[in-house]
Length: 360
Image (tube, rainbow, N blue to C red):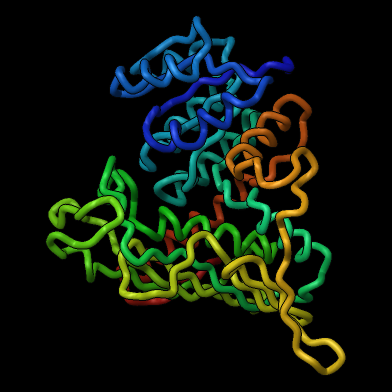
């Protein structure tokens, strides 16, 4: 493939402008040559800020896929269209970066994996929290075996009052759910990745609609409209894995708690434990005494940057483009993201039925 990757953006809303476009624009190996949105003014605005002079603006994503000069597509649309657009792009010979969650349903996510295998094109999912300095360091600790067998984890995605009131976040039909599928998906992805365990056995979960009906509620982005709040405001689950390990997943946009953590994990292993609360901490026992080590992550970064200047989205974008130019392995494999979607769906099913959901 050429040393310059030509990219088309489908969906020019908040996640595209807040994450994908700025990170891609900072890479010399990237030209952003096409912008698509159902609102043409959004696509035009994004083009003017991030596009090449000859970049095109479209409202029909199929026109982008018909352009043979486009190497890769970034899918930044609501959850219900992730699979449709990603599969069409893969079938059109494009590599795909799809924003998380992989899809609205596990069945759709499975079709995406199958399309990537069938076409031989790369499919990446936007779990950018894997690229944080604390995540990368903790992953290395886990891979080195410093924690021993990790048999218990907590996946944290708790906001006290931070309900996104824009776009379609509150629309269950478009998104498939609320905080569980929006931010819980990040925490669960981190837990599974750290444990290197993608074989769930049984899930028991509960989604709540307890605070969503509040009028004039305190909220980071202003009061939400109770009539439009059709997704859960919080959800919790116990996940048992085939090897006996267990994961507690907690997620909320609105919850009466002061224990606030988002996209973080706590791990317990046979040799040591770790958590991301107030920084990265490793705990254990040595010479019959307990210890807690706080890791200084400010001294150095990953291989291609020093200090704290690079954002997780910058690292994600660089590794994604490197994989296209140099054929390096993806950090987020679609098969892993599929398991995340399968577990999330099982939690919603368990909540709806009041029963545990078993995996084959």
